[in-house]
Figure 1 (cartoon, rainbow, N blue to C red):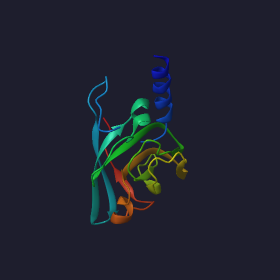
Figure 2 (cartoon, rainbow, N blue to C red):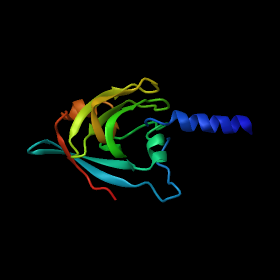
Figure 3 (cartoon, rainbow, N blue to C red):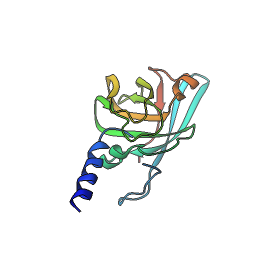
Figure 4 (cartoon, one colour):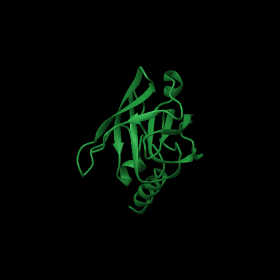
Length: 155
């Protein structure tokens, strides 16, 4: 019993940064989603269906243990305040691009293809209020770069 409790506590602590096998409904209700639109150019928009990670336990779990993430899907982390953030990829099985967004929902930095299972902290030097995780390589494939504007609604 003690070993099980220690293991559970370790897993909870290990999940503290970033990215579970599939969306999990929480006691507060089902997984919530939003649509994130990225304005790449005046005539080109990208649309991403993003699960919301708004509560601490959702942000801690993130995309850990997922075996895949489809193109056009992602997870939007919503934090209570803006600050410089870093994530790790422990227990994350797939490479991810991380878009760091400021309070105005503008891309202030990107981590490209974060290495799966790494415990190295990765982030950008600008403060962010939101972080959008998408499949690794997405930003390069679609021309997403710092300075672009995004749009989304929160519940």
